[in-house]
Image (cartoon, rainbow, N blue to C red; front, side, top):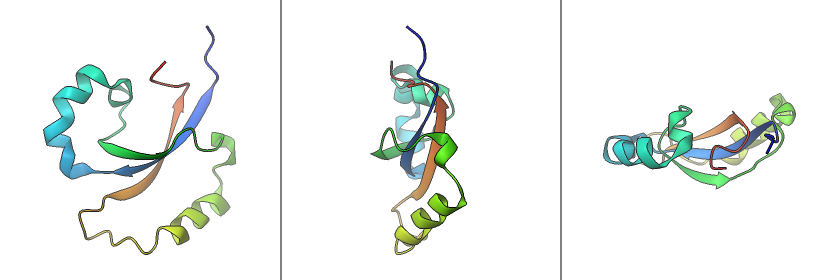
Length: 87
């Protein structure tokens, strides 16, 4: 089976969870081995990585501007990976 190529996902990083879930993720979650931090997936797949331009990132920034980064709510991030790490 061939890889579909790069994909993107919309994630909310949860760094506070990393110390608790790291050992499980390293063993069970292929995305952890790709360097994806502890997170909640908002949307996967998102849009083709070639479409992640300044306009899209600006829209996301405005959409999530109401989220206070100083709380335990995490931070929004787009992640791009080659293929689906869960296949």
